[in-house]
Length: 171
Image (tube, rainbow, N blue to C red; front, side, top):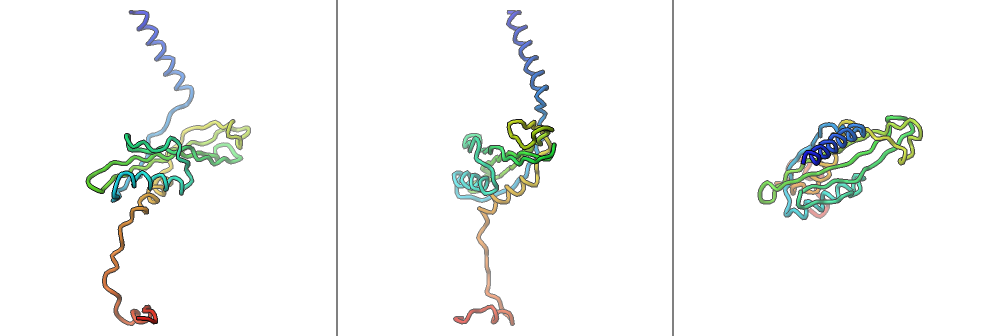
């Protein structure tokens, strides 16, 4: 019994040490949040997928309707100088609030390529975590929200001197 406990403890210590060597120190997430009104959760998922494609993310692991989230694949932008190349990965979480209303949380993870030799070779890249790209998260959130924009209320027709100019010949 003690031998099993010692082996388990040694394995846990080794795994922790290996994780530290990999530099897996992902920073705290920065989320962009918003609300939408949608007819169904299926429509929300479709619009999230469409928005991801529109801003250049591949679908990656895709949608998980049970977890109510989507994680994209990495969108890579290599650069010939160390620390200038980067890659981004989007994560979107959504939740139903009440009938037809959903909350959205969008995060875009970012890693920098720290490879000194061959920085344009994706296979030789040395990725290090950096702060999330909140600007890219806000852009992605707005693309999703734009798909659910409320109908415009045009109200009463205009009056005054400009109304006659804007009226067409058939009015």
